[in-house]
Image 1: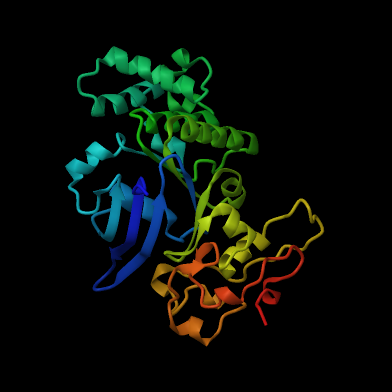
Image 2: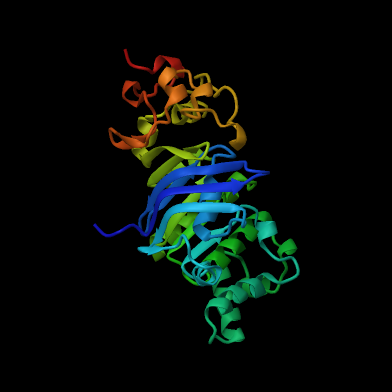
Length: 338
């Protein structure tokens, strides 16, 4: 088999704190993205999703220490100079930031910003050609009247149009990998569907590898082929989206799914996950999820579980073999074997 488009191995990110205190935000993440694949990365706020992707892009602050391996088409990115990363960002990896309003410069027209992204990586292209391509990109992302819209400023765009403009900018140089950091946050359901349809079309038509960072399990279930569930800086479950959602092998994944309404069982009671994710500075020993887990045993409080193959997916849970398929009307405590 050929190597993945993006291959992350044992990625760790540590931030320097006050004095000798160091805060580890990401702890040994492994993740593969194939060409033409949409890989969803799911987790609550503070789980390390965005920090992982920013480490891939080399956009973290100087206070961050990044170790491990990140390979793009077999080329190692960790340790590259800022000058080398500038040639990769935008050209080979596109990034769709979470807030399109702050991602766009309010003092430049949308067309100018897209054409600037093109000219930065194609030195010989004329300004006129870059402007024409910017209009074509706005048309590609379904912006109406793109010739006129290219001359407008970000504040003249709606939220959904701004997000599509950011996608156009990320696709300006036809990157092989596109990272979308919560691209549908704060958008209404109709616009969310349009954005996801656009991303799917880019993946299918251009063979772009796509990483979708989100907290929306419904979006992942409908669009992704693979999923990684993150909690407190670690991947706790990983696999094909159908396998993970049909038979989750980690209590955290099961808790997330149990908290969602089910159209086929409208009277089923939703089960909330108790507590909250721990702050980085107060991460508990052993499995970080054990204070919130109804299935925790003494081993969970002491030993960090490794991500290992369980059935058709990967799970970082000491009790993964004890779990049964998740039922629609029973709570998590009834899902352990024996």
